Image 1 (spheres, rainbow, N blue to C red):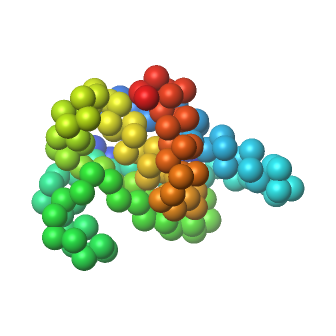
Image 2: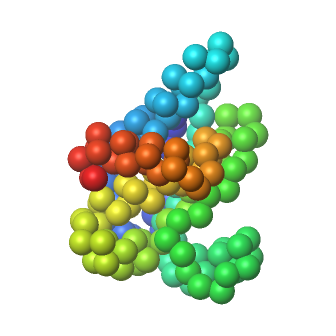
Image 3: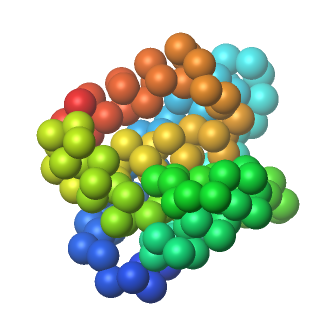
Length: 142
């Protein structure tokens, strides 16, 4: 999975960690496709953007009708190699990290994993959250 990382807010983002995370998240999707007898796409492209609170609030209002910033949104494109976009708000992530008593990088990992799982077709539910927890455990961010 190729990542295009847009960090216009200047947040301290560990790009190597994001690439490792994307590899871990895409592995179960490739294995599931193999079990089902399908060829799994290995050459997906995903855009990950880090945006300010105001931009995230506007996106959340436009696409979810919620007039407040959120931590992560995902937009599935599934056009050719482009799987979609994951948008993260670092300032909300920072508040979450304090609230959950985890590091900023651990929270960024959780949010990006969450967004990537949505792009791979998972909806909120036990299966998605179990997979998210397993991935974060492997990443040492559990």
